[in-house]
Image (cartoon, rainbow, N blue to C red):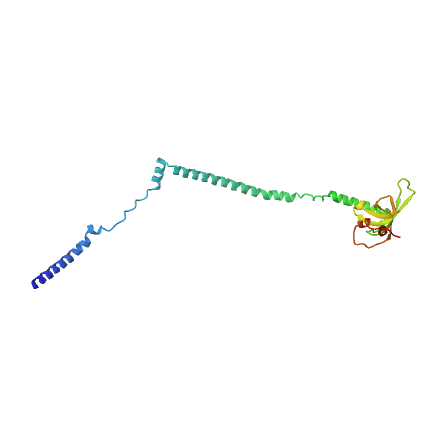
Length: 229
C-alpha cells in the first residue's frame, strides 16, 4: 500500500511540472491564439474618379434618374433666379410710377345724385311753392275739417266739403286725406290731395285725439259716430 501511494504522488508531481513547462508555449503559440474570431478588414473605398468611370461605362436606370433630377433642379434654379431679377426690376419701377401719380393729382369727383334724391328735391321745392300760395295747416287723423274746392267747370263756384279725417297718406307733394261724413243716412268718403291747386282753403274746425292712425272701423259703426255739429 505504501508503495502504491508513493508511486501515485510521484506521477502527480511529474504531471504538474510538465504542465508548468508547457503553459508558456501553449499561450504563446500562434496556432492556438488564432482560434479567437477576427473581423475581416474592410475594403478600401474607390476614388470618386473611378466611380464616375464605372457609372459612365455601366449606366443603370437609377443613375439616369439621378441625372434627370439634377438637370431639372438646375433648370428650376435658373428660372427662379430670372424671376427674382424680374421682380426686383418691377419693384424698382414701382416707386417711379408712384412719384408720377403723386405729381399728377386728379381732380375730386363730383358727388353722384341718385334718382331718389332728385325726386326728394323736386317734392320739397313743389311743397314750398304750394305753401307760399296757400298755407296748409297741421292735419291729423280724427280732425274735423272744412275744405273749399274750386269746381273746374265753373271757377267762380266753390264747393264746401266738411267731414272727419279717417286716414292720411304721406307722399310728398301727392299727400292725400280721406274725409268721411253722413249724407242722407249714408256714409260718404272723399279723397282730397291737400296740395292740389283746385283747393282754395283748408280749415280745421276741431281737433280730436284718437289712438289709431286710420279710423276705418267707423264704416261698421252707427252713423252717429261719423256725425258732428
